[in-house]
Length: 120
Image 1: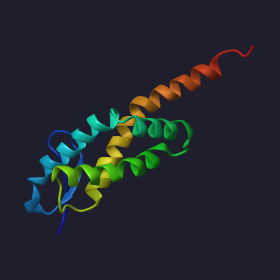
Image 2 (image 1 turned 135 degrees about the vertical axis):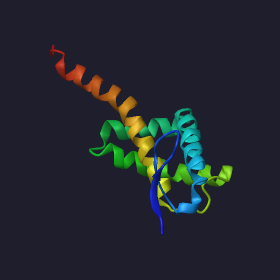
Image 3 (image 1 turned 30 degrees about the vertical axis):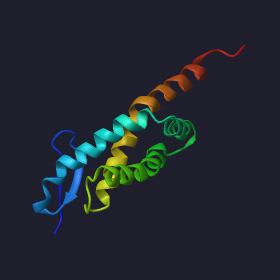
Image 4 (image 1 turned 30 degrees about the horizontal axis):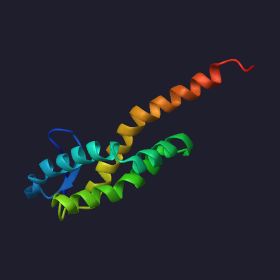
């Protein structure tokens, strides 16, 4: 029987067996690695900004973009192995929210400034 807990550093929801609490640190670690690495990957950055500019539901599209990277980093670094798949989605959703709160907010601000400026 799984239960929902929250990771200690990033307060991410985690669905785990009660005996798997050591995985909470690994979930935080994968999130933090991706938070750092995705920002420096130009192709991911460009695709994410395109999503933020064009998608009607950018959070869903961003989470879909980020989810394979969660699995890739987990496998590469030997973290979160064997945890339920919804933990991968929780990380992807948090990354999507973070990107929307930063880059998405900038894009919305730019669009608003453009629409507020008088036309020649």
